[in-house]
Structure formats: structure tokens, C-alpha cells
Length: 121
Image (tube, rainbow, N blue to C red; front, top):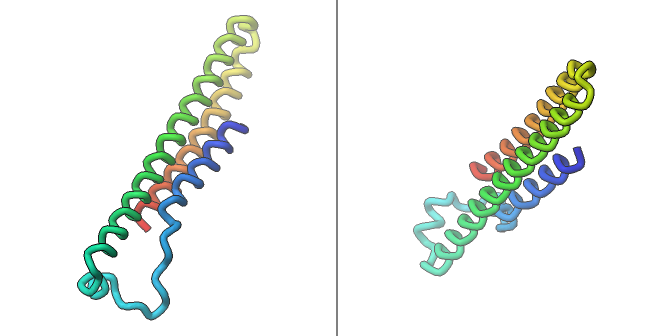
């Protein structure tokens, strides 16, 4: 569970890299009108900030998938090892394994949704 929380925290941190750009002020001109008036250097800076957002989301998604896969593999390996040692308790272990795996998948999906929200915001 600690690994899953670490993965969620790292995902949020990586996704927030793209959020470091300053937000437009209230009452500011629309982006299309402002883009027509911006010099080429400012457009280049905006493209770089947009690239950082994509890069942060990509790292966040990677950490999420790797962390979830690692956690589920550890659960499965421990459960199979314990079922081999105590076959009579395999039903209880299998149920605990399924519940824990579902919780890790839920946390992974939550982290992926956070990444996608950051990407499309």
C-alpha cells in the first residue's frame, strides 16, 4: 500500500510540472487574439511550456503503470508462494489477493485520470 501511495504522489508531482506556467489574468484577451499579437520568442516559450506539460504527464503515466505492475506482481508472487506452503488456506489467500489487486488497480486508474486531466486542462 505504501508503494501505491508513493506512485500516486509521484504521479501528481510529475503532472504538476506542466502546471507551473502562469495562468492568464482575469479579463485577459482570448488566446487566439493574443497569439496573433505575440512575438515569435513568446510563442516559442509557450511551446516549450506545453512540451513540459506533455513530458510531465508521460512521466506520471510511466510511474503509475510501473508501480501498479510491480505491486500486483509482488502480491501475486507472495500469494502463490503461500498457497504452495499451505494449500488448505488457498481460498482465503486468493480472496485477499483479488481484493488487494483491485485496490491497486483503482489507485492506478485514479492516478491515470489525474494525468489525463492535467494533459487536457
